[in-house]
Image (cartoon, rainbow, N blue to C red; front, side, top):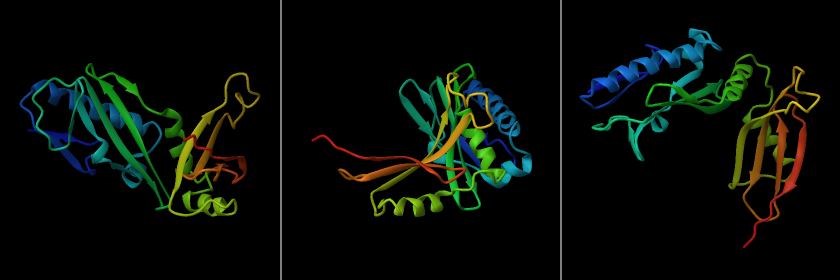
Length: 203
């Protein structure tokens, strides 16, 4: 059994079961990379306050077989995913995923999302999930079939906003899963609704 310790000592420990020493060494290195990555944007105190391991979305993979926490591993992993939930004052939650290959190279992370989480921690994003839903109700978007996502758009080099301080748009996308129902996109910093559309399903 190996103990796959999360980035900070104070966070929850999790484990896979294996006798493979290489996996143990890989995990140790990934822990270091994980910590270095988050601490570039957050202090240790902030990390402990805002981040928590997402055990359901943390796993390693051998070919197409996934092994989640507490699973027994008897193969050579070719992929590792470590996932964390970011929670800010119980008003916002988002999951950020860090992927590594079999050589422990980082192959995927949404760096723009990480910047967005930093802006939440700095109180620069004023429109939280609840406020976004309140705005949506003014556009007749309510009920049980609502989907709400925090998204990021990076302006292309051809855009005048590319070199400005607002080169990244942080926004909420709210949709209603019904035919001809309204959907909107809300600027998460200003609260402006910059796109309104109606869904149309083809049967």
